[in-house]
Length: 109
Length: 113
Image (cartoon, rainbow over all chains, first blue to last red):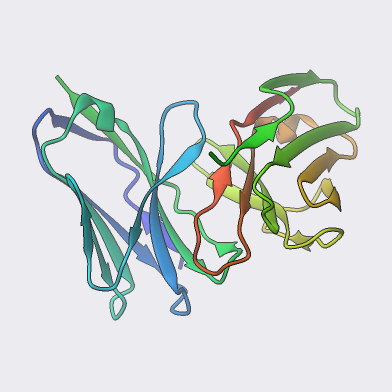
């Protein structure tokens, strides 16, 4: 089983749509979870952390299900500027990060 | 703002050359990482370091070595470059505190011909 599995997409959605990405991870010892965003030909940057209770940051909502080892990211009211690849990252300690291969999102006018 | 700076954006080297990729961070981070990123394969960890002069192999260390003589600098060395090492190389750093984010450099696109 792969350590982190994500649907590679691409997800092509119209502006204003709601889109959801899922991620499963195999290491049950993972302690923290993140979503990173990577624009084309750029470096990954942190989008948001994922907390056990679920958390929201504007149009973005992240959920964590530890029992199922599953993380999700919901984007509401998609903007053209949301077009990017979204990377799921379970982490254990300070340096054991495992990056998913990412899900590519294209928001279409 | 945290800054992770890689010495080159683009690099072209010949097969068999020794190649040095340099990375410097200005946030006094303990942890530093080297990844390579290839289409369809995602980010793969080559080496990481959690302290000066300390290094640990990642998932794909073969053909690479690293050096960390100073806290702020982490170098990736390709001892004898090969065409299958053509890739995007990304350096990152993070604090020793658990569960904090990693900050990436802008990447070096290395082409080995």
